Length: 437
Image (cartoon, rainbow, N blue to C red; front, side, top):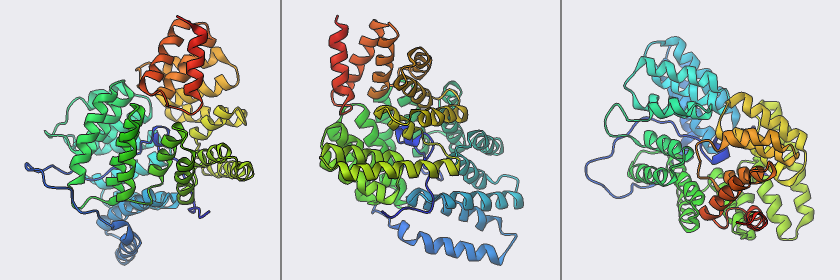
């Protein structure tokens, strides 16, 4: 398997597939042109970076080239998963800011985005707030601030920022972040409308990077999956991969879709390809589950060993993987490691919904039901329309003697999607029968 030099989980991205592509604002035209041709900018990324690197070496006072180079490093990171590009981006963006400290919004944006990738959320927030202070009416900076606040569980403040754009009509970046807010705070239908509209605009942008355009379709697919729209999710994943075939995140979540449907061969194919590009522990976990379902226990055991190796890489990089914690909780193994990762996530993110859900489910796997209940209540405080989150909270409610809540949450999970998980959906039905009316 070909692995990148270093790997990292992107923000809450990964917990829900959200890693916001931060790029300059664009406007839709009054008339609606057909979809733009797909760019192959990623094929020129290395050459463009080499050009900017040479320019930066020629002139030690050129702050513009440095901030542009930082943006290119970040784009290559999104495309390949090489964490070294994040550290490079951070270094040149700080150089640019040192050379031009006033009004250098692009450098501040690169710094903030780099800090998010490194899970340094407080530092990211400081950088983005500096951008807002420099340009109070810049909707990109304001929306990106709201995105970071959501990563830290500060939803009320994020909601106030996202109440309306200052510049008039919202741009796709704003709309995608607003969709994330709507998704987390219980308005999944509204989130899908926002994301569909944003994606339609992006599809008409002739200069948009292929990965960014693919990302919008991946987010649409994730929202469709949460809503139980498997056919819509499959269509959006197909489009995301048509636009950018090496989108490891799209392949990862496509594997999750087929896993839920018990389409093990497609789940394995998507997970294997994703792991070849970007060997996240979660991806390897999906691969191992599919291998076992298909009867290949030997290869599955080898994949399990890779998961442990990747865990050590994450620990060495200082980037914890809460999805690895969730994988261990789901399988009832390495629970002390899972608890350490979950606690680290809570420390870094604060009272963020999926950090709370991870803690709740790890504690549940350890049969620490009363402790799990505290975090489950936090995770569901906005009634986020995620079937797995509802299922976790429902099981914990049942074990802590709250049968009415357990019944409501388990029904909500199954109503959203009767096939939301290859195991948990059946468990939810069996538990509902045990609870009774």
